[in-house]
Structure formats: structure tokens, C-alpha cells
Length: 448
Image 1 (cartoon, rainbow, N blue to C red):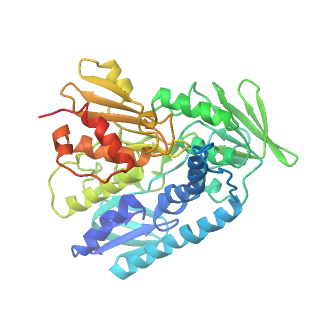
Image 2: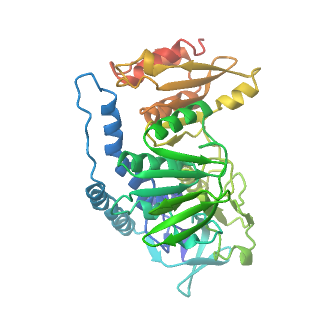
Image 3: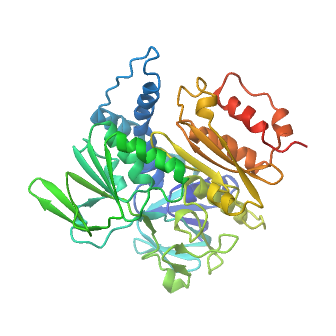
């Protein structure tokens, strides 16, 4: 064999396995047809959170209105975008250098399997004992007239100037995160959603609160509307819904989901099972050809398709190749929407708890009011904590600017099956914001 392991794709779903395998003495190659380091690093999560930073700070300043602070902040999108390029663009080069420094072969081009141990790139064959497919997903395209005028998230994150009028198709995470920034810059923002609510996977009360805030910021929501067509009219576009609603706009972003990159990989020829949700794997992340693994967003799975999930799976596959016999065991995985304010959730949801009151109960902790100065006067910040009948924390749903850090803390408590006594054995920094949440949780948590 030419290699011990070949990875197809160079994002978090693969390189987190490639590095420790190389450190363990394995001969490793990574194959990539696009940008080295994948979607999240180059035109996804990293770029988005970088651009989001000034908007988050501006939002926090607004909470001090009337308390001695002038909250007037002007954000220059073009300068911010230049900063993004300064920081994000070199990352793929840095990762390429890391691979070279470690002795991981990087082979550029489209890769396809010819059997369970052979991959062809640029008409050259490479063999390996094990192959890992980490090809990720891409934005779904609506089959409508004028589909060629629809942009995707990758293009939005490279916009040199924010359009004066922008229309988002779909009311999911991408649309709401981008809409929050566009509205803050003064754009006329519309969101067209086929369903009757936004962010269907998140707490309805918190989503309604977010939608109300975005509406007040100038975002117009159109629920129960499917996009029928997009047409260019002079120097702008018209988005037309199934009901005949017409929206004049300068930019249309399609955010109606993502589809796995399973085409042209040779899966059919090799006999690897897949469906429209992705590649089918067993509880060891092996495909139907046992020498071939799959990792990350390309997998058909119920677990959330998130960068940390892909990293977890990548690390797991490294362990498998190095001899671990254990099946994969996912912890609870948090999810965050980086709007203003943020939404976050982990574990058992409030909806699940309310449907099974014999097993779970919910406590609403209005921490924004109870811990006002610690949370920078964000009075409407809220935590809904889900407990089992022994009063162990099993789930949480949060709205608030500090939700991303708080959900990580709560994830540790859930995965660690921590009691009030366990927390009481720790000494936390004070007066930090999170210590107040810990104090409030200890009142409700199980005591030994």
C-alpha cells in the first residue's frame, strides 16, 4: 500500500485524525479539490464569527443606554471585510504548511474510489489500508426559475459591500445570523420561510423573542411563503413567492438547507451505501465497505451536523485505526445560533420534557433579571433548565448574549452527571458572570 490512511477532504472531519495518526507513525495522505482546511475554516464558522464580533459589542453597548454610556457605534462593512480577509485567508496556507511540516502528503484534485483500498486523483491511483471520506456538505439549490440569481453563504461572507436591500430564503440559522448583521447596518431585510416559524429546532418562546427583536430592528418576516422565482429587473431583482408576493431586492441568498457531497466519489462502483441524507455508517463509523470510514457532515446521522461533531468523529476514527475496539459514544452536543441575542441549547429539550413529565421537569431561570449587572443589563436573558426526576441536569435552552459560553458550562455539567455536591467542591472565579448561574443551578440540582 502507498499509505496507511488516505483522507478525502481536508476539513475538521479529517485533519483531526490525520495529525495524531501521523504522530503515531502512520503514513498519511489528504486529498482536497477545493480550499485546504474546508468550509468552516475558510468560508463558514470562522469567517462568520469574526465578522459578528463588532455587532456583538454594539449590541452589548445598547444595554447600557441611560446608564452613562453612549451606545453610538458605526460599523464599516468594507473595512471589516478587509480585516476578515487578512485573518481568514492565510489559514488554508498555514494548514498546508502544517501538513508539509508533519510529513502528511497533500494531494490536490478530485478524488474517487475504485475499490475499498484505491483512490484515483488526476488519473493517478493511490492505495491505502484505510480510507476516510470527509467530503462535507454544500448549500442546497432550489429548482426554480432564476435559480442562477441565488447566492449562498460562502458568497455572502465575501461581500465587499452590504446590499441596501437583501432577501433571505429560509428562516434557519444562516439566514437569521446574517440578517441580524445586515439589519444592524441599515439594510432593508426580508426573510421568506415556507414554514410557519423560524428555527424550528430551537425553543419556540426564545425564537419568538428573537423574531420580535429582529422585527423591531427592521427585518420583515414572510412565513408560510415558498419562493417561486427570481427575476432580474433592470439593476435589481424581484423575488416572487407562490402566493404572488413580490419583493424588490438587490441580493437574494438561498439558505434552505445543505446536501451531502456524495456524487462522483465512486460510491456506487465500490458498493458503499448512501442516501439523500449522506453516507450510511455503522457504530464504528465504517461504511458498508469496512476499510472505508466516513466522518463529519457527509454522514447520514441524527446527531447535529456541526464542526465540533466532525472533530469528535475525526478523533474517534483515529482511535479506531490505532486499535480501539469501542463503538462511538456521542456526548450531548450543544448548538448555538449567533444572532443578537444568541440562542443555545443542549441535551433534552423543553418540548421533549413537557411531553414526558413523568421523566423530566423544567425550571425557568430568568438570569438576566436575577443577575442583571453580571450579565450587562440584558434583562430578557433566560435559561430553561431540564432536570430528570433525580434532579440531575439533562438539558438546557438559553437566550442571551452569553449563551455560547454558558451552554459549554452546562454541557460539562450534563456530560459529567454533576450534582450540587460536585459543584460545591469547586471554587470558581468571582464576580464572574457564570458563577451566578452555578449558584442558581445548585439550588435545583441533585444533592447526594
